[in-house]
Image (cartoon, rainbow, N blue to C red; front, side, top):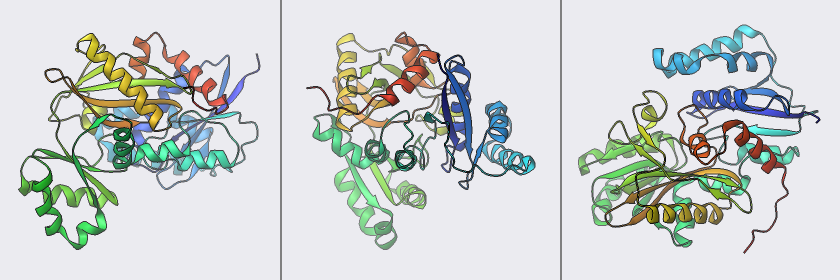
Amino acid sequence: MKQVTVALLFGGRSAEHEISIISAQSVARHINPDHYRVVPIYITRNGRWYSEGIASSILELDIAALIRKSGTAAASLKLQEMVLASGQQPFSFTFAGIDIAFPILHGSYGEDGRIQGFLDTVAIPYTGCGVTASALTMDKALSKLCVSEAGIAVAPGVTVLAGDWEKSPEQILSSIPETLIYPVFVKPAHLGSSVGISKVSVQGELPEALAHACNLDTKVLIEQAMHGKEIEVAVLGNNDPIASACGEIEPGSDFYDYDDKYIHNTAKLFIPARLPEELSRRVQADALTAYRALGCRGMARVDFFVDEKSGQVVFNEINTIPGFTDISMYPQLMEAAGIAFPELCDRLLQLALEPEQPAKT
């Protein structure tokens, strides 16, 4: 069998740069070397691309340990120093010999349709969602509109533009108690992995949270906090996607934030989730409905809040390039579904090569 050459894209310009590296390391370890030849391509925080040499070195760096010991800033500095010390010239954007791309770029400039549009332009097939679904799912406010139209419950919320906040903060602050009940969450609309999210319990905390979020994004979502368990479902496939069993997250802090996900690892994961079977099936069905409504392909992780007492299932968000670290929920859910990490990588690469077809009705 001829080896397929895979360009593994990682790093990137988002706040999740280091997490992307850790995810890429996991993928590189699990791709079957008998079937695939991996060409690592590292993208720096300032958008420079490097292949093989320094990219391979970064894949071998234990960045997770470095983050835990010294913090993200120290890890970022270490990466910059490695690139400078290598003396290597940036990638020349010649994709000769590349059969397929595996973007493992979390957040902005990777999960939002930009890299997907570039790969479409240079005619390189890639894993995961296409341009439209990637851009749509990256916008938390638009995602909610789409899944709500598909009949899935969403949390009450208000969308605020950063420009409007700058011009009329008092007007925005006065309108919130008329619409929402505290506590609320303030979220940058286009950032992933809980970056920039604040929990606000009283009105007096709202200005600081809004100012912080508006400093990070042009659009901010203020959502009413929902009661219930945090439940995640992994979805895999194109026209006939499958949903994993439900996974449950018990946060180690007030909510499942960035540090809890990737640094402290204090959250507890339960697979399958501690839910009645009938309720679990409803969540799985809603995950597939959301996946299709948003036009997803390849993979996504769909997150919900589920209240056992009332039976309420509320959509939270969807991630089209979920974490692939050793502690990430997506590969663990797939493992529980009988799809081990190497097979998961293989399936994603094969799905990327399938031509797009109209969805079956």
